Length: 437
Image 1 (cartoon, rainbow, N blue to C red):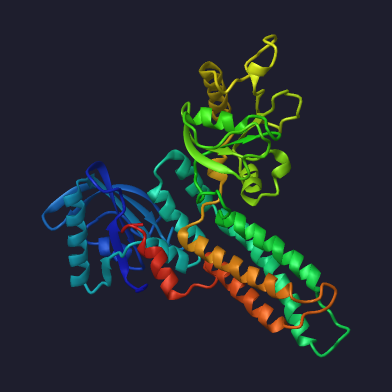
Image 2 (image 1 turned 45 degrees about the vertical axis):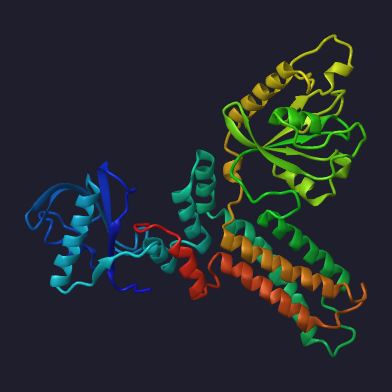
């Protein structure tokens, strides 16, 4: 991608508006505007009201001047605010480019995502934060916008980097074993320890990729998770809250064996409602993941004697099977619409009182990132399988093969934040942007 030219594009949303914005970035940004603006030093940071004079056009304008490196792209950036007629905006750009080229300036229209590409290229953003910019632009709800902003703060990199560092430590120990392969009494890491550490890393990666049977891809909507002991009526209540039968219910304990996720509308909130097995069945991977990712827990207990988690909404289920005395708002019968409506109101109120959007704190993982995480996990799984063929207490017989698999996994994690940025990866990331961003 050409980084020497000054680029220019409309950076306000498409369609007519009271004010539209044109953005320029590059070392000749001030020179491009020099003939159109008088009485302003285009090299001094600030906001200036002026008129933009291009040929026979004279337009009211506000200039926001941001000299590099203290700008989004680290280059000289000028944003020009003029009346937001789309035809007018495109005409201004055409005339500025024509004027600049006549004076020998290297100015052209920006490509999709080029402003953010330059921010990444000059070290202003990591690649995962650059991708989060695209998520902010594409956000379709306030929850998605919160989550995208959270990702822009670098959450993806902060979560993946410790895993990559731990993997690098393990790889170093394996490679030490290669260096001392001819020394029988030197064991840098035992097969049992290696298998344990790799298993932990694989589990952490699986969580970030949103994997697990019964789980959907990562979603910004709040997760309301029904938890409680076996045979507490969670699945029956799950169906009642949905308003239709989604899961099989039975008096036999253990009918639900994995987490079931369904979208639902509860009060003012669009949520993902999650039914889980009884708590003693937590070893099921997706059920365990669902509980850890809960934005709100609804603790279901027929007796109410089980201690609910902090912050959970208590639902004393199976009210119809208990004596009709001393019932309160926490008592609920899944077959009574009034009871279910009261529970919905309590869930809605609890979601509204959260100090911050827990959904907005959830990691956003792009398709590219998810693919890299899944491939890294597959490489680690392959390494675990190879390690399992060795004696638990001895050294490694095939350390070079294991090291190669771990190196591939580490390279994939490095590509998430742009530490290893192949050109084709960069092309795919920034081509998804709109022009002007």
